[in-house]
Image (cartoon, rainbow, N blue to C red; front, side):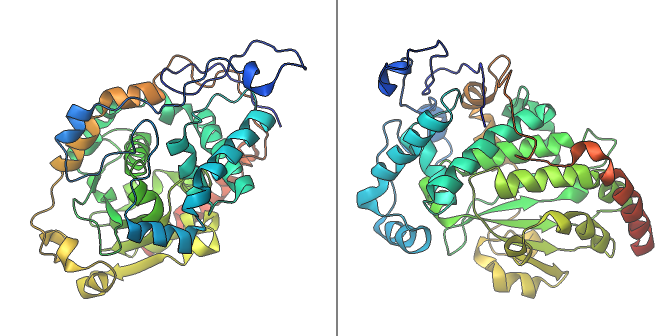
Length: 369
């Protein structure tokens, strides 16, 4: 399996694509090496003090002693071996995927190791899937930056609650009923979701604690339920489960209509058993929600005591990081020429089976509605 690419990005570890002699040492074959992460505008970050900053460019652990202990117990992360493990993964990439253009700084690779509990092989596969997802879905990743999804943020389709829960997990709040198919293409929602996940995963706290999703289905009807379809749903689930280094610890669904059975029928076939078990359906019972997410971190709209739902705070966080995301996603022709195995992600795209299954599911949706 070989991936070839021509992606050029400043302030990242990059490989020189020119051929080297077989006798040339590995370290000398890759001359354009910068082990720092993409530059972060510290002045912008200072304005959003409620959300933690990413690790410094030259990695230094920012975890509290409690989180170091949690990472050891839950993720098999040993502080004394941390950088050795990072180097092992880096060596695997240099050896097995010498043409893969990717960041190789410590902070970046740690995301993948933590997401796969320091299993080198699984972390490597996750990294490959991460890049494969970008290649497989260009309409999401082309020119991906916060200013291009400002309309999604303004509409209130998603936000992140300012306070994490008692387990230190930030809560991603989705409100699909705010979107109507005539507003803009559904893929714009996916773009805003991906940028949000990219920002959420930067702090080491999130890498260890994971996140919680709160999805409010108020206002969702036939038009929203049938628009994405199983093919699009499959791609979103594939990226979240197998193509992004984040731990989704719970998905709380509230105010789901009768039609939700049809919606979940579209999603469930693509969910792994462990992930499916993390879905909790509360209906309109806020007391049930409060057993999973305490009132102290919820806005008043969901029976909480943390004030009214604030859509502006997270928008300011993302929009304040425009340059950071330009560096990350907006280089010319990203991953042009990448050759990906058919089995890596989104298998079965060309067989047309999803169209047939969607017709059956559409009938289910009308029946539920």
